[in-house]
Length: 229
Image (cartoon, rainbow, N blue to C red; front, side, top):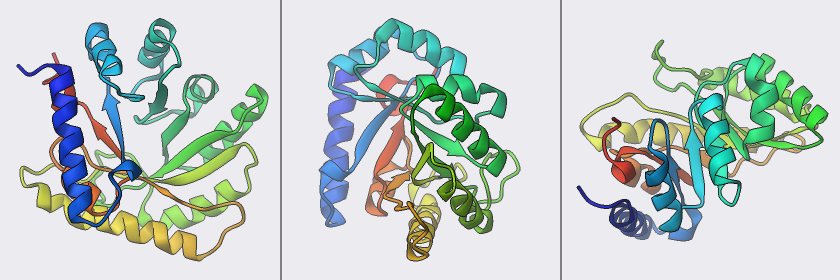
C-alpha cells in the first residue's frame, strides 16, 4: 500500500495536470482529506504531508478529532447536518458544505449569532434527483440563496454536489458542469451580499474531471487513505 504522503503527492500532481489542461491555476483548487472512519495516525500523516483542509461527515467524530489534533488545519462539515446539531457545528467547523434547507440555514444563523461568529456555508445541491442523497433541487437552490442573503451570520460562499457513482469518471462531467452553470446563474442575480466562488465537487474517482469543470475544493478519502476499514 502506498503511503499517505505518496498518495497526496500523486493527487497533487494530477490536480496540477488537470488544471493545466483546462487553463486553470492549480492553486485555485484546494485538496480536502476526507477523514471519515480514518485512524488518527493516518490523519496526522496527512497533516505532516501538507494537508491543511479536513472534511468530516459527523459532528461527534469531528469533535473528538479536532480536540486531539487542534485547529492548525481547517475542518469542514461535508455530511448531512441535522438542525439539532447546528449549535455544535458552528463552534467546530470553519465551513459547512451541506446546507440544504431554509430551516437549517436559519438555525445555523441563529447559533452562529449566539457563538459570536459568521459561519461560511455552501448549498448542497442534488442534481441527480436521487432520493438516497441529501441536497436541495437546482430550482430550490436559488430561493435558498435568497434566504441566506438575509441571514447576517451566514456567509454563503458557493455550492456543493455529489453525482451518482459510476466507474467512468466522465459520467460525472454533466453534473459538475451543471453545478458551475447554477453558480453563474445565481451570481447573475446579484443578490445582496452573495458572491459564489466555491464549487465543492469531485472525489477519489472523478476529481480530475471536477477540476476541469471548475472545482475549487475536491473531497478525497480513499485515494489518500486507502479503503475504509
